[in-house]
Amino acid sequence: MKRFALLAAAAALFALPAAADITINGAYARVASPMAQSGAAFMGIQNTGAEDDRLVAARSDVAQRVELHTHIADGDVMRMVEVEEGFEIPAGETHMLERGGHHVMFMGLNRRLAHGDEVAVTLIFEKAGELDVIIPVDLERNDVTGEMGGMKMDHGNMGGDGAMKMNQGHNH
Image: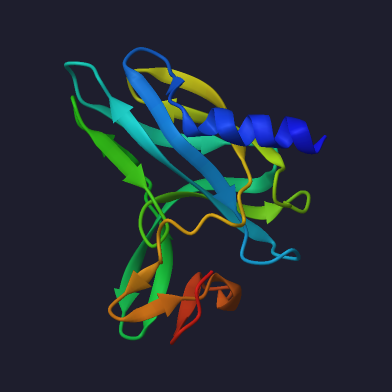
C-alpha cells in the first residue's frame, strides 16, 4: 500500500493532461491536523491554448462542500472567502492555487485525510469542461510558507465565520 502511495505521489509531480488545453501540475491536498474538518487542494493550472478559460467550480465526495476560495486580510485576521466567479486561467499562462492564496476548499470532510491518501476531485472549467484528477494528500510538503504580512496563517484556528486568526511563528 505504501508503495502505491509513493507511486501516486511521484506521478503527481508530473503534469497531468487535462481537457482541451488545460494541464494540472504539482497537485497536492492537505489538512491542518489529523482531526481537521476541512482541507484544501493546491496546484498549478496551465492553459496552453489560445483562449482564456476559467475554473468555475470543483466537486469531490471527500467533503460535504467543495468551493473555490481565497484569503482576504481584515486587520490581523485572514478570512477565507468563496470566489463564486472562479479563477481566470489566461491563455498561455499558469494560475497557481497555493497556500495563502487561491485554493480548492474541502469543508465538512467525510473521512480523515492522512499523508499518502488520495482525493478524487472534478475540476469544472468554463470552456474545457470537466476534468477528473486524483490528488495525493501530502502533509509533509513545505514549498509555500503561507506567510502574509510577516505573520503565518493558522488554519487550525478557523472559526465558524471563516476567519483564520493569525499566529506568529506557526506554520501549517
